[in-house]
Each structure stands twice: as structure tokens, then as C-alpha cells.
Length: 257
Image (cartoon, rainbow, N blue to C red; front, side):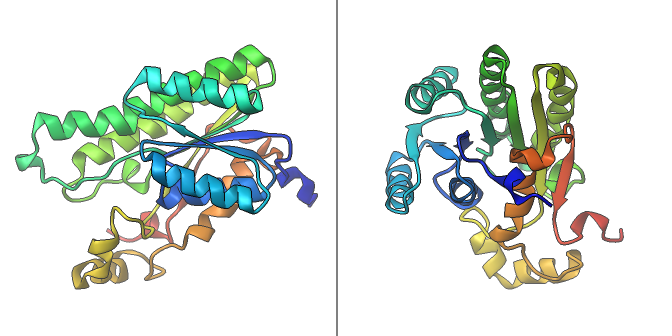
């Protein structure tokens, strides 16, 4: 295989939710592959530290403060990226929140907050990126970060599952419509990886037992295990892939009922 197809030199990638966890990891992977990276999130202090670290390693990086529930914030972030690096070629649509709430105890506020960030926010960012990509005539790659909970459900996460199922369907719908504009739209559906949002649970005896019982590989995923799927979808290595959902879950979705 020609490894140059994974090379992102000359490309600009914008990653939302990049101040920690998966998003920070994605930014480091894309920078190492040669892309100029624009890291976006609400926590400006963390973004500044990430950018400094990337620049110290010789990479091109820019931080933009972005709230995916605010269309003006999204537009301002993209405008800053375009001013600094030119057109955004790659979008990693990763920003999201997680909050377990049993259905009978859920409030409308719980529901709306989850959908506004995880589904509406994904749409807002993808729409801003796609319009610019289509206008440029160069196309691009959009990678939405879904979840295995968008494909099957879990206890106490009905609002999260619905939002991520929406991201899965959004990915497929966008792929059909945007192919003519040379825009590929795919998604990664991660299983359970240790992040700030879930660390306490997976440190607990209950969390560890859950992984042993439900995940065939009997362990959490390692962030590096998302790097290959990410680069495949972001680069020319995946040039004939659109509308694809890649599960990275240690076999969790295939476990027996």
C-alpha cells in the first residue's frame, strides 16, 4: 500500500471538542500526519496548552474558542481557521457531552441539553463546514464521531442514544447529498474508551465488571486504537468511502443478548 495516501501534508483539519479526551488525541494524530490543525472547544486555557505543545513539536496549530450550541461561535471559529490556514479540508465533528439519567427521572432540560449539543451541534458544525467545502470546489472529508450507543441502547442513556443515532443517520444522509460536491462523510462509532467523562465509573468495581461482562475483549479501548480508522477516513486512503460507520468497540456491538 502507498503510505503517502495517509499523508495529510497541505491539508487543514478542524477538530471540535479538542480540549481533552478523544478530540485532543485526534488533533495530535492529524498533526503528526502533516495537517495544519485547528482545535476548537469552549475551554480556551486547555486549547492554548495543546497548541503550544503541538507548536513545540514543529506542527502548525491554531486554537479557536467554539461553542457548538451557538451558530455565531461556530462561524467565528471557521472564519479564524480560514483566515489563518485557508479552506478547512477535514472536519472531525467530535464535540459532545455525556450524562446518565434514568428515563423516569429525566427532565426536558436534560433531554434538550443533550440533543442541542450532541445532535444539533453536530449538524451546525457539519453544515458550516460542508457549505464552505462545496463553495471551494475542492471538497473534503467530514468525520462525525457517533457511538455504539447510536446503534444499540444502554441503561439510563436514552437521550444520548437518540442523539448519537441521529448522528449516524445524519452521516448517511449527508453522504448521499454531498458526494456530488466531492465531500465524503463518514462516522466512527467508538465503544468504551477511558476519558474524563467516564473515568470515575470505569475505576469503580461496577465499571470494571461491566467491561468484563459486556466487551468480548474484556478491556477498555486505547486511544491509539482510534488512530487508524481516523486516518483512513480523513485521508485519501479512504477516497471511495462515504456513508460508512466504523465501529471501534472490542466486539461490544456483536456480543450476545
